[in-house]
Length: 291
Image (cartoon, rainbow, N blue to C red; front, top):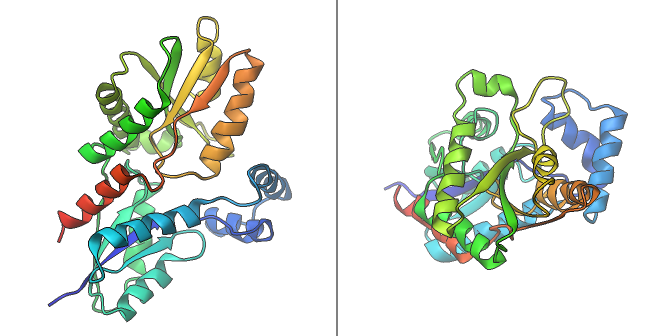
């Protein structure tokens, strides 16, 4: 009889500023980053305390899921671009006697440039005799929608406050080649708005890569600019992310908030899902429906 294990898949983040060049080299597919990019990213990380909490929170999410599933189902974390690497997490599961792995990318919406790459990395690193199957998308899972809507309700949006749902930007070429990501993000936004009773909202993309090619929009600063003539308060709801990391703590809390101040407006955001009970409910259901 096969033993099942769970692998939470994520992007990865350096644990110190000294690791930034090596980390960015992995992110860039082996191409060394420029000194300017290393400096910029070190500055961004320094602004949020010197490191991103991504790994710590993903580990905490794994621990919470482990408590739900019980001791018979090991749960581990594997990162594509930094430690703990996906291949090492799979080796750990194999050492525990796991022969069938359920992978859960920690990104609700499928993209060929994120989720697909996590799955490919896991498939390529699979130990002999191990079977791997992955969740590809859970962007409309009822419990996920509940989890985001709960965060919106907890923020108590004011009548004069504009809700902006955000997700990570993607190169235009990916969408034009058939990537479903943008459609799935829009579907998540609609579902959360309906569940939370938000009648009107905007949707924006954030954290575009530093490349010359065009990325999908509108970007969050552009939406703030466009709306600031009539709206003075914004509530950002990052539905493309499931925990705090630099895209939340720097790109929204520092960068976007500064843009809002420049337009004499205010910006705040909903709390990230992190280890919320409803989000752990979501993860548990994704596993149990595949057992």
